[in-house]
Amino acid sequence: MKKMMLIIGVLVVSLGVTAAVQAKPKSDFKTKVTIKSDNSGPYSEGFTGKVRAKGPGPAGLKRQCKAGRRVTVVLRGSGPVGSDVTNRRGQYAVPARGDYAEPGRYFAKAKRKSLRGPRDCKPGKSRTITVAGA
Image 1 (tube, rainbow, N blue to C red):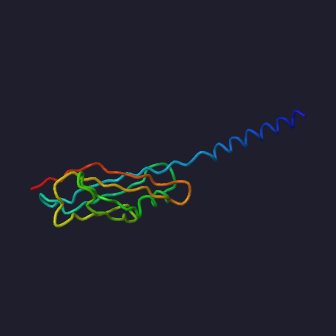
Image 2: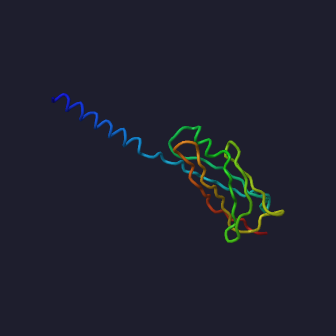
Image 3: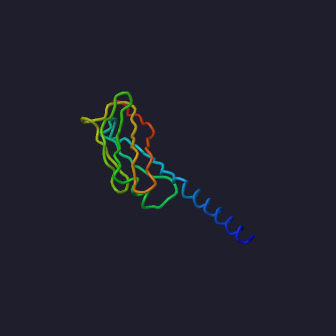
């Protein structure tokens, strides 16, 4: 009888631990976005940067987080300047509207991306850079 109670107790505990482990959701990958101004003299002709994925997990899923992401460059106080889709390395390039970017403060952002399975790529935003006028 004691052996039977011990076996039942072990089964109940192991099922509880298994259910707790399965119920824990996987964390999403953090997204880091960078931005640079393509300066050739006093004017900027556009913007370039990268999208990176941070966090523990398989490299293949991280690669999916940076490839094929739509990145939008925004002029603070004015709105979107343009957008591009990242290549497999996470690189993007957004040309300036017209010949040169107007002076102001710019940042880049990438929206959330859903992956197959329990993990996603969180949205990300770059630091703000300043493009000076002539």
